Figure 1 (cartoon, rainbow, N blue to C red):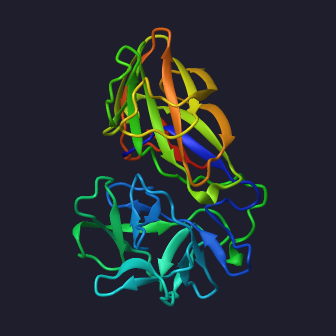
Figure 2 (tube, rainbow, N blue to C red):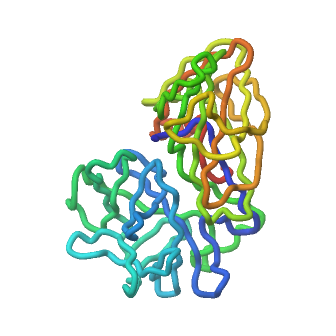
Length: 330
């Protein structure tokens, strides 16, 4: 599901953010990566089960480890390399990892001095995912991208210590499902939607996948409400008092969920919202390795419908997400 209006954030403590930190076993540093450019940007870099890397708005960020020679392994210890003949980034069992990766002081990722990579669309992928290559022309709709990683753990020591700077931000997966449920049609199974909506009878449930790497962290729900003049392809309609109620459901949902079959929930709080503002809703321990569902309902006369998209704002102000996932922004 592209885009994100409700933001789910995970707080990583300590001097280095979870997105990149020294490995605890002395075997290098740990990092996650994201893309920029290619007509989108900010996509987390995840993996197929086979170990092939992919990026997209629905990806859970994959964890990698980089040693002193700039060689990457993934969370399963598989060696990462640019697999011939296409030179797609893949991590395989028994494969010696290729050295040459480096993270700059600005978080930019290079391979053997080159900072330009390529994304190509995966045919038939419903999550708008792309594969990552070190050379162009290896698939459909290939575009140049950059890779970046946040934090300080894998940066050269010469970059200096940022001291008490707040933890950097890193996006998690955006909602993989948005399920509208209607109290006037309790048995209706509407399936997933590109639109979040609330009214006097309709609520929306947002389903997020939480990576296992967030064990022990706190997740925070945020609602980001831009003004229409800052949007490119997203949009919304809004009227009424602006009252919204949020709750965390006891388990994730799926496309067969109806109002009648909603899991039980606990309140995260209420907000009275208006465009041009961001709101922190509530926090809870991250259900690492599992899914979490957040229900958003209207109160009073509130009526809100918004279309989720992922393109950045032209002015770099409040990001055009409403309900989504990520680490706390600076």
